[in-house]
Image 1 (tube, rainbow over the protein chains, first blue to last red):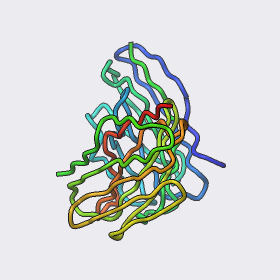
Image 2: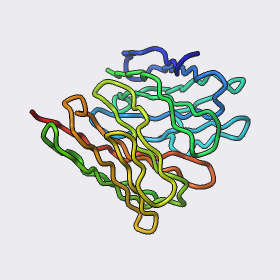
Image 3: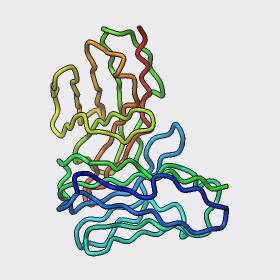
Image 4: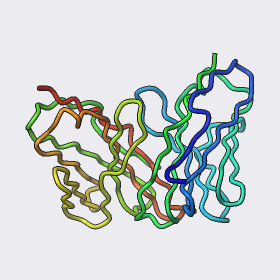
Length: 115
Length: 110
């Protein structure tokens, strides 16, 4: 696609429910990142996918969080048994390849509100 | 460990020059980015530095000193539309993980 696409743009859920957030990166981009941004805060790294390599999951805050990337393209971030502190904007970004010199292209984010 | 520090907020006047500083301590270094983020929007790329020195791009310039773990973003001829958060991000070695600072909120006043 022309840009990074994320869905849903807004999600309101009840505490304890599971949610899935989807990211469709720019076509041909091999690197994909998930970040979390709480209100007025910076970007917190969650997970990084690069091609067929094992993902870097070092930023996932707990075992309730997981992510996968199928076919090297679309990625899904799953949060199980959501808690109120999970409320944030979840941003996905892609980069053309794994080299550090490439800029990140961000999607518009998925705003998650846990009641 | 990894640590990226930026001032939380800055205020400047339209037409003036402002310098936003960023200091970092990371496990390896493979480049530093600056991104701009307007409220409610996604971050967008501004600049990239991997070698020491100044990179100029129109009204925006970015400087890097690797030995000091220091960078700054310089904005000239400030415009009201420059009111935004400015995020400093460092790429570490190995996995090319990009880590962001908390961002600096810049308010441009008339």
